[in-house]
Image (cartoon, rainbow, N blue to C red; front, side, top):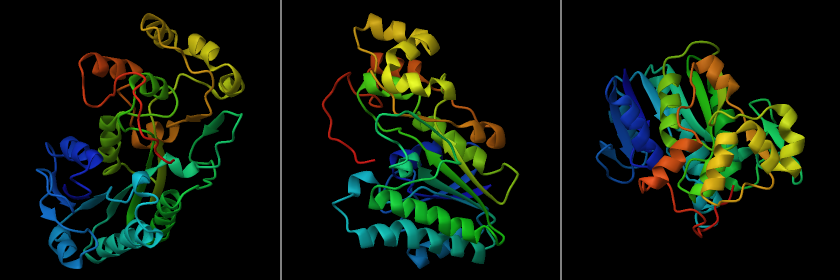
Length: 296
């Protein structure tokens, strides 16, 4: 396939390019130059779109303003890029005869659906309750694509969970319930290019969890005991490294839909986080490193 990839210079875009390049012809668009980017500019630039989309079979759209831009970039610019830009790209796809559109979204848009003092089991049926302009615009872009999907465009929305580098102790525990390796996210995008089924699909993309819905009550009050039951190898590794286990867990993202409909499964769990730490990978920060907070 010939695939147009927006946001191709970013961390996710580079990973998607790597997942596709061996089997597909990929044209990258990004405002920042990089070896995975062929057209440098804003993806909303119609002249760039015309060049990129000619002869293309599919679009993967991961370019966006993200959580770190909240409070730095205006709400109007968030709306222009994340919502109007997505709508423009979908309309351009239709006019060029492109039939597959894969959109990168985020589990962060569930926002206030995560209730303090509880542990929530979250899937595609959970109603999002956005907190920030980032969340609101990603959800609005999803809705715009759902409307367009009633035409000839097959849309796949992938709500990816937490995947940026963080302290290893946090990342490893997140892989049990709310985190994912960037390579697994890229693999899900690759599979969403060709799967069948409904015209519009929405899938949560998160690492496989050992937890079950009936664990939620215990996770909200005594997560360490539940982890020792459901993930004893992780608990043993934390003990060996003298790291405390989390006291509470407030959410579990489940990717059952992606497993079933896309035929996708995550490959990299907490053990990979620890292996990356041990080999000093830049994908993982040292345990308990102080970092700037990121709005969710």
